[in-house]
Length: 249
Length: 79
Image (cartoon, rainbow over all chains, first blue to last red; front, side, top):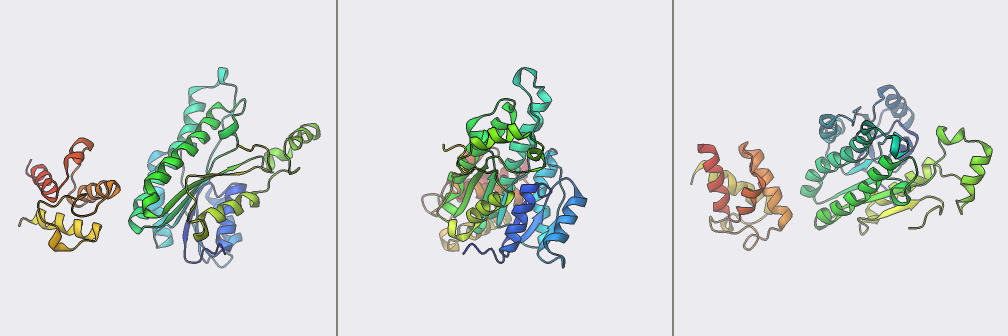
């Protein structure tokens, strides 16, 4: 089950921990993966790690804060893979945290552009072909804070909540063509950022997670793999919360 | 039949997968050719690309039949 042989998948933000895990897992299931991100060297390193022989892996760097680059990425990925896109994973995102009363317009706008507008541009470009071909899978990586909110992340939580609403609309637009659009909303994932938390902070955080541990990038990758598989063909417009039980919306 | 009409017909046949004989000038995309609203948007986009014209939303809404499409594109091309 959940095999992806012959499928072409574009993963944005593949240079990050979650993106890399998603790309590695999709490739492991048989997909051809196109890795995108801003850091070419990191992407090249990941590609070599995923497939030392270079089989079924391509690198397509793009700076998604540039609207033209976002618009062009799907076509670039298809050119690199030599085939139309079957799977789009909108994973790229950034944060510009700060309490609202001190948040600059630029912090708001940049997060909106990269975390919400760019995924829209990618969906728009990918959907054109997917609708025509009567098949396709889009999964966007939101966040638990898009559902619960989080002090200091008015911009990020708004963008992630926007991503959820957008995906529901796109799911309705694309449903008649067998194309599904879903969201995965991760909770706290163990990364370099959370590794530096003080013991007391970590204890407090874990106290709010019924499953008693931080998430791993592979926890997210598994959820994505399911949603992009043929087996998930009757699931669309949904948000899969992968958060150890921290929030149960 | 004009070159534009020919090309429009071809796009409609290709996109909607209908028989060429059904694509008469009077044929309505939705009522006669089985298109849904997404098909009509995709058709308009296909026309835009094929003829290098821009069809604004209010004009697109008025294109209901094959003839509507041909007339609109011919007018744009003549202008």
